[in-house]
Length: 168
Image (tube, rainbow, N blue to C red):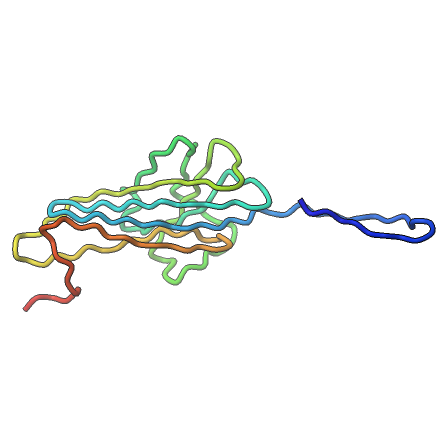
């Protein structure tokens, strides 16, 4: 809480303060974990929110269109997800056309720290001795005051990370 104090001499003059409530300021760190095995890949996104100034009960997420039907939220804090969200203002992302916008609605308004988790598991077949590609997929929070992120890749011992170039 911010306080206002002042000194005066003689008689204090009447004053009127004008106050305005602040909107939510959402910062988020998107932690992406990609687990790669011979037969499957699993992406896990941990969204660590910090909501300042005013509580909110909804967030807009940008999920790659190619996987938007398969991504799962299993979180008791989530009330509903509108997977066909149309924002009032245009979303700013470098490749916005490749993302579907979701509105995640929570069971109650939250302020402070909040963590939500989403995941995607897909089969993949990497033949012995052959090279296969795994796409690193990102989830964003457009409209956040600040978004930062980290990506970690965990692979099976039988796999080796190589440059993404076609074999000859």
